[in-house]
Image 1 (cartoon, one colour):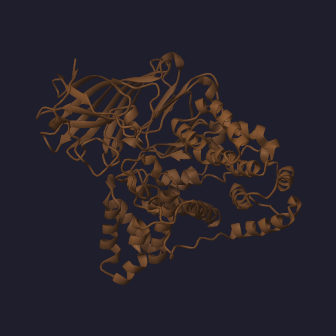
Image 2: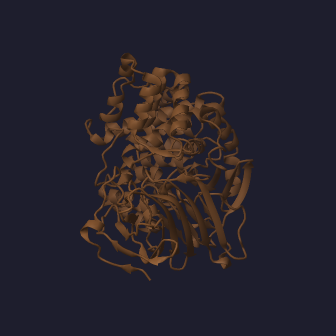
Length: 611
């Protein structure tokens, strides 16, 4: 049995690395391969077992330092002879967790760690049967981004560390559940033993490792893709995302063959408590059920997660300070994919305008000199979740759009293909992106470099004065109807023929915030907003309802907040409810009931709003 000891100061010293969100000394010791062997215990809501780390040691005198959060370490074994290991925990950091330091012998290139997780692990959500669509069996899923992998395995939890992995997951066979990971996945449940084995042969960061165990079914969509989900939703989702194969073909025209990188592009429709629109786990993308609008108007989320197969999964931001390298470039690719499958720019341009509007809303709400509006952020001693938002996604997109505008689409796409090929399966910084741009495109052309305005885009707050102007012919039609309604407050006078979810989102978000209850009642009478099931429309509609004291909608708002879990959709409603003491108290009561259903990330965001 291994021993927990107090190592000397010199052997316990944290080796500083370029990533402020990891304790791990990944620059001194690399993980080459990770093997995970875990048993799933739904009764105790814990994972228990071991991980095995195969190492490449650049410094044979350095200890191995890993990231952990609320893990119970039981034993550590070293090398092929499984010698008893000596280890210690560092002091706990409220954001980063604890450093696990393991003393190594010069010859050790393998470490085995036996451990178990905590019931409240931040990267795992355990759902009771009543919290699922089927209502009969429990459900487990992980969300490892940004630094939550350390809550369910001791690991180098930084996007700068990449490794292959394999896994053996044991599920109680009597539950008859299917286990899935971001790897090569089974299509059917193992009803006999409940044991599932996985392998990911491409090196990926820890945040892209996922685990799901639930009562799931599979439906094929094409030769390289299909959909997993509970039986109550999998067929509905299959219709909604039927164009996935077309998206893959469109993406390959932009960035190169998909199957040269990853085996498959399968989707998993998540429970309503999933906090995001999607998560780009390699070979198994998580998708929020909130994007199933039953008119295929919100399928751009699939294009976005597919684009991550290149911009994020293939070439990854080395730290969360430069999250725009993942999300901004992915947003740019997303819009190109949507252009291709639509055969025109209609929906793509509407999404571009909505992206720009989200950015302007954010910039208008903060100090013009706020350093967090820079693309290259400084999140030292702060939660990396702060990198998630309009700056990384929307300003990041505009940055890459500005490069296209200056260089032309053909030349810019040639550069991007070169960038993706050069840094395949690597983690990079903005400096590497710019150095590649200098070498391949700028090549000493000072006038071109001046027009690209790289320094202001990357390192200055706000938006450069010379930025892309985003327009949509469809939204110009919406603006015409919007002006008509603002003048008359008569819903019968507006022409909405041919509108989809994107049109309505633009219309509702552009209405004056305090337009008055009678105007909303008229809209509700004609279009039935309060009773629809489209969460993308309900979110801005309920914000307007709250701001205009449309109290008749409150029962529906309560149901929405209890059933939905996507942060983007419920956060604005909670914010609106804080504007009067009465509605704030009501919101706190609703949240008390909804909190157990929410993901830990959602709980944190809403708790901060209602404090």
